[in-house]
Image 1 (cartoon, rainbow, N blue to C red):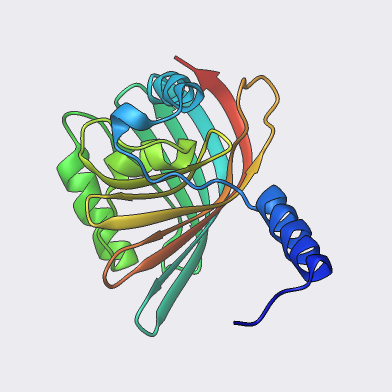
Image 2: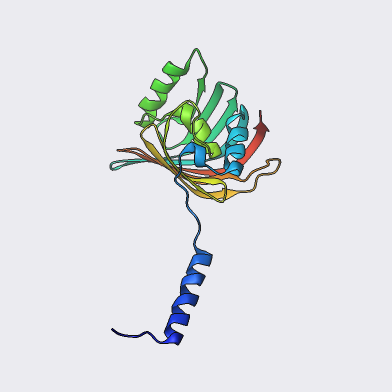
Length: 195
């Protein structure tokens, strides 16, 4: 049997403790085991019925790619979604509410070539799951959503930023992927935040 010198044991101990110090805990837990701070954050953000965001969206499907400037204005169940860019549409707007959602979604899908779960994107953009759907997996880092799987989509949060007037940092960059499409959102500004 080979003996390890005390100095080597000491070096291994120091290196392993340093590694433990820089590693970030990643949680993929059932809802009952989620951190209390995350549960509180999630409840607040899921209750927001009013917000505006501006940024860019990039949609990749196979060899096709679409890039557009996005303006999202959420007021309760009403949504005004504006896209501007080389989509063969110039600047276009869609209105979603309880009476017009099906027609607006069909037109948006026709223009983009992709069916996006707009009702869920409302929540995903805020950095929380859609409360009306089952969550397949969730990963929380520092009381913020790092990744989420819901409704056949995988959502990864790449960056958060402080927002004036908001209690929490909000997503700045996120990526949504389904089996055949990847959507990247770059959020430049948040406004009119709250219930």
